[in-house]
Image 1 (cartoon, one colour):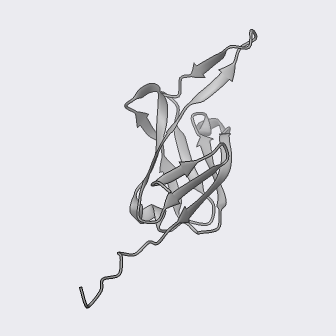
Image 2: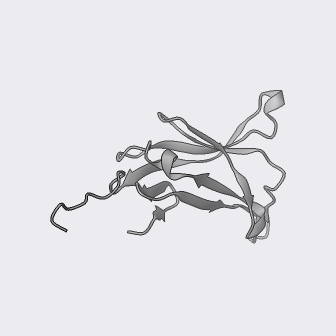
Length: 122
């Protein structure tokens, strides 16, 4: 397993790692082509149920229309080994009481979270 494994609906991150996940939103047009929606001016948050994770998503330097989910290791260790609900919430129109959930899935951690054990006989 690498630092993270991503599917359409689940994020798995190693307990000794961090998460940097690009997010793009695409829409099918009437002629069945797919276009990318510009998220650069939107206010997006990544939230995880049951743990104190609510992070504003940041611009993706590799994609001017995309955003990044960024979790540091101190946040990753708060995740459970059993998948829990998470989402991406667009709060661009929050002043009018109209947030929009753009994505809903689960997140979990695998592997160990503490420093590796040391051997006394080494």
